[in-house]
Length: 218
Image (tube, rainbow, N blue to C red; front, top):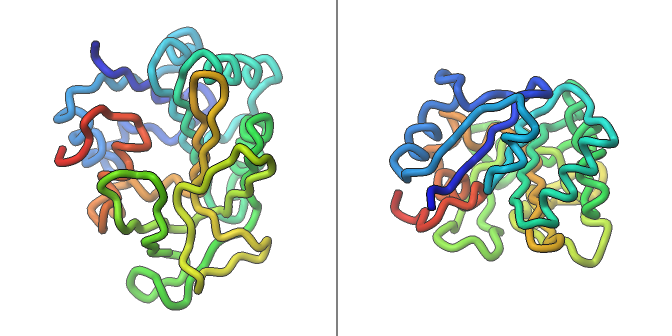
């Protein structure tokens, strides 16, 4: 069966069809033979194998949050991506989705004065990547920290020991199993844009995040 990814845009998410920012990711997914659909339809989104919420700027209703929980429980892979400093209230908006799964986005940032890209400490580089085959180092620009508020949360990406955050968390991405599915919270929505995706193992990490089968080497 074809792997199906729904890229939701019903809450004014940053769309993968914006070629200026996401053409490299889009081409990689095409090469991998997966089906990617941008959609405003909840029925279509909730029927896909993977559902992406990439920088949503409009709040989710209680009914929508409940449907997302059920989607994951039934085996879906839900990926939510925020940004630093609660820009456009995106971290706050996504926390209504993340908190029922025991994860929370901070409203601050992660910096690293030692391990960073160029001369910008917000462009955090780290090799602390856990349980992601083929990924040894990633660039995570302008990320909100992720906090794990239940024992079921697992770190996926964490800043090096030199990374700092006002709220105290160096976690840049985390996941939690829920029912038969999985919820993944990523502190930055720009690690897979055209600027960052060619750095280190960012492309491999992006494909893993989207659950692309046999992603290594694509």
